[in-house]
Structures are given as structure tokens and as C-alpha cells.
Image 1 (cartoon, rainbow, N blue to C red):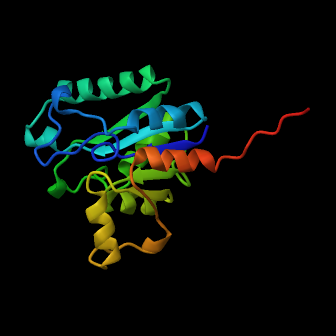
Image 2 (image 1 turned 180 degrees about the vertical axis):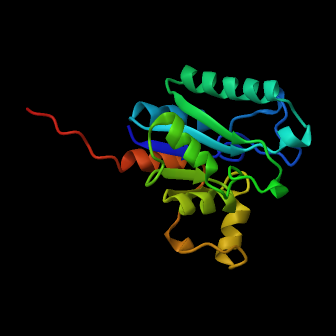
Length: 193
């Protein structure tokens, strides 16, 4: 199965400047869970790569984060899909870790744990960090305009954000529209008559 990588906040669920601190704060973006289920049923192995510095900031604990992720996985399963793994960076931006996007440590962890390389995989995100991590690891970056996506697109278009070949990045309204286009481009199976 081909791997497909998703950012979490702003792609799957609504983002918040106050952080997603509990299951009560976690609200899926309309259509996102069904999109994940549709991609999963079509044969993609779905992995999530998310920066979660709220852990180091003390805004929530590991149990809270795991409860959010369990809720996400259960709701995707209720829609008929599956998430192969959720990989997160708990560090603060200034800590110099190898896992916080735009670094590629989360993608390396995916490769080690799932036994599938994210190189060449579609990576859907809403921030410049997502696009940079995707490019650095050899993934195919896709931008959605939910979360920080509209501001990211504006900064790419006006040149304030630096990214090689920004015109080659596919841009979609949201995860549901990105998934629909990805699924529409899949080869149609041939049936003997």
C-alpha cells in the first residue's frame, strides 16, 4: 500500500491559537474523517505527522494527547478507514530537535516503524513547515487552505515564504477536496469481460 502523510491541526481538525488541549477541544474539519477513510479504503496507508509543542509547554499531558489520537483513530475507523500511525514531536521550537517539522525526524520514524518509506509519498499540510519537511524528505507536498493554509498560500504567492518551486505544489480547499482529486487520479482497474 502506498503511504500518504497528513499533518493534524488545520488539516484533519480545526486548529486553535490556544492549542488543542483535550478531546473537548478536538473538532474534525467537515469531510476530513470521511476523506481519510476513503483514502484508506482505496489502498493508502495513512500516517499523521504533527508538531505538538503543547506537551513541553505544559498545556496538556501525554494522556490528553493519546486520548485525542484515540478519538481520531476511532472516528476514522467508524467511517470505514484506518490510520497506520500517528507520529508527533513534543519539543519546543528552540530546542533544536530532529523531529520538529520542518525537520524530517517524524518521517524517518514513520519509515522505521511502519516499514514504508515516505519518499515519494503525498504529504498534505497547511503550513510552510509541512511543505518544507515534505520537500526535504522527497515527499510530494500538497497544501490545503484550512487551518494556516490560506496564510501559507498568500506568503508563497507574495514571496515572503521561501520554498523551492512553490508553483509545483497542488493546492486544495480542504482535505476532502484533495482526497477526491487523489482518488479520481487513481488508475481504473481493468476487468476481464
